[in-house]
Amino acid sequence: MTKNNPGDNFGVFVGRRRAVKAFGAAALAAMSPATLLSACGGGSVSSRTTMPAGYRAVTVDASQRGAAIRSLQGLDGPPVPAKVGASNVPTGATVSGKIDNPNGLDRTAQFKQMGVDFVRTHDLDAFGTGDVDGSGVNRLFPDWSADPTLPASYNFTALDTIIAGIVASGAEVFFRLGRSDLSMISVNNSNVPPADFDKFATIAQHIVMHYNHGWANGFSYGIRYWEIWNEPDFTPFWTGTAAQYYSLYQKVSAAIKSVDSTLKVGGPVTATHNDYRGMLKSFLNDVQANSLPLDFFSFHWYPQYVDPLDFYKLGVEYRALLNSYGMISTELHLNEWNYSLFATPAEEAHAAFVATALIYMQEAPIDRACCYMRTQPLISDAGALTKGGSAMQAVGSLKSLLKLTTSGQDQQGFAVLAGGASDNKSVRVLISNYEIPAADLGPLPNGNDEVVPNVGTLTLLDRQSITYQNNAGYAVTVENLPWGSGACTVQQYRIDASNNLTLASTSKMTGSQMTFTAALPAPGVDLLVITPA
Image (cartoon, rainbow, N blue to C red; front, side, top):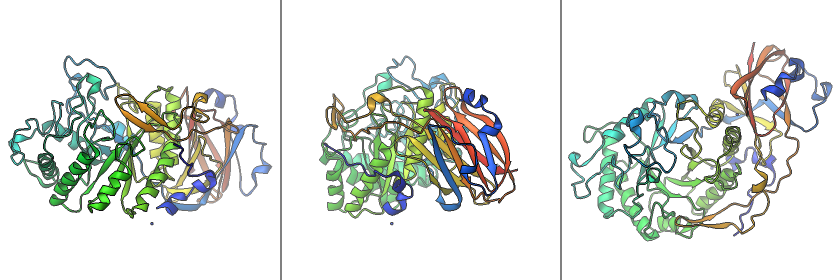
């Protein structure tokens, strides 16, 4: 099965979202400040030192401002655990996979560093906290024979702690109604459908009431987003039929809307990128035929061949699909994404992947995105940001700045994002240089469909064929600085093998136009912060 490339010209890529939908020290140390940075008031690039061979010419026009840079700073995983300290891992658990935050740290400060403002309540810990039912010891409804209308039937204690932590961090809660993956502690995933869909819907209704309407000594958080199940097209999470999922979706969505019709419900949380299990077009057909609410369509993707452009491609494809059903107002959520599940990259490669992917997503019709931390962490077990986490911090530092017109980026891994403050007191330029490993380039040898035993069939996107060139470094020219020809300061922050968002250089200049030149071999990320002196 072959997929079409949604865009061959990256020049058209920039700005497309509005039409689709009505971020080596050693190398730097070898250079003098004059080589790193040159400036003049109204001169041209040609009047400066010739750009080194193999560098990329990048331009930023600070006078051409667009809409505010969107936030895609969401995560799967909470800032505050239900159990502080090592008890965040079950006693005697046989760990067979990665557990997020095994030391039970309060990571609120790290979430704020990264600008996280949206948290999905899936795989919150190794206890099943937040699960409606299943095998997790902290599941919300522990005894299936209990009366779902009685407060005593519920176990809200652990999740109350986590939700309060999300809210206190300043992030919005995205509530997943389903079950977590507990395979990392060798606990069965409980992938059979709920025994009684009507009862499950009633339980979901009372969970909404607890967190939004104070029921059962609850709260008034106003949680807006309610997602029904997780990856029903994968055997580890769903062994039922497509029709059973449709029935569950219908009953749970109605129950949630009965509490508050303005709440947003959605699914199907597809991860295969095909309809073999009935969770793509077939699901949309059922929604349409039965006039069901679908306020957001959610999907997951981990590019097996680690191309950060995949998310953009899928965003365009899914948006077009929804629009073809008349679902123009349905939001599009990529609420699990990260590097490939089948590879562990060097931290600097992961950082460049994260930064490049998030920059590309800016031009995609993706309304919300949540990076899944358990596979490739953004925060170390000791609580420090990894280089990937620092990449997210760099991107987040441009959030809400007005997007500036740029050139020199491409769709092969060299990404540029620039923003200007509305008060004209700063300009930021983020440059990320990522290369897809050679083994992951070229045509797929066995076609696009890949069967993963005991999981499902994935439909992969076409791989790119690339000969990398002109990405050994860059010469970025920023034109029309908003403070005119007065003095300004340029701070260069670097992520590479030796740096983790480290201040690599600081330079002074005058002029309404500046050019900054630096080596930046892949993988690497530079953030330039330009402010009036």
